[in-house]
Image (cartoon, rainbow, N blue to C red; front, side):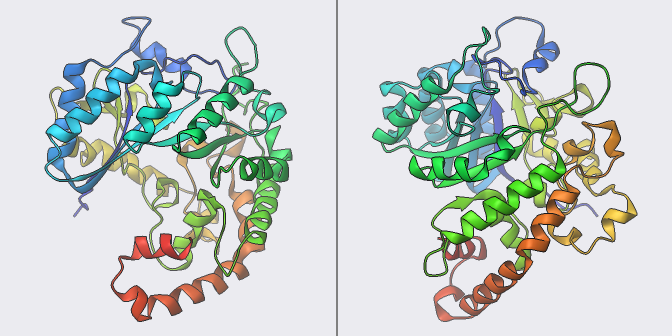
Length: 396
């Protein structure tokens, strides 16, 4: 009997693969080949209304929208004003969260004021200080983008917009863990996410591209970053928040982490493209994993469809060596996309070594922290608090 997946969050790409940058490592620009009916891709108001109406009718008391791309700000502010109005129209008293993942190039005072007024959480794509960011994040003419992105960051902070740092980790940037971490801290970006980049080379070899981070380099980066993170703890609590490390803590207290790559199965949220096509995951926007279209199907049905169930189970298809590993219960094989970008990985998780390096280094710390968590969980202070919120409170 298959388990029912609730509709808690959706990832929406209203401008499809369109972007005003041409980052060397971007995997999504090429998706324009799937939507070649026009050069420009934009979600219509009518489709937006169908989407929001469905989400509000089919979700629980809390639901989150993540607006991503390509570059979602290409839609213009009016589009997101419509988003807010439609969420209110169909809200049914629900708690709604909006997140915007952006490169920041179009952010001006009007954008900053809007994002603050409507409590958007912004994930700003900024890889680190200038030399790190500009190494791969460039305009189509090859010009660097850091100066413009930094201006946007300053503006977002001025308007008190909640901003997280979304940093792509490459063969280059992985060498500068301390510099990147200290830069984000200095810029008051205390919520950080580091996304290891691995993409197939376009030279026909089916090997990972030269900008892809290796397992060993990623492992060393994680260890150095972990030490920087724990060094900044005050009174037993973190003063900076790194998604990878805080997600791992869930596993140490016997709970399922909120991030999909640390769960037993994939496919916990649907990805909706600009024409209403729904895909199993934003890393697998391809014909094989198209689930349907919201114009003629219900999102909740697509999320619980046989094809989505099939996709989700692919995560657990791993070599016995992996499943017998003593660390498996913490990493659960990682993200499936990282097993298929380099033929030399032979289906093994590319970052298996990275995870082992981190876990061997951090295991004692996590066990001690987990013990403190359980002690607090058993106290009266935590008895009335839901576990997920309690962990977030515990981690500051």
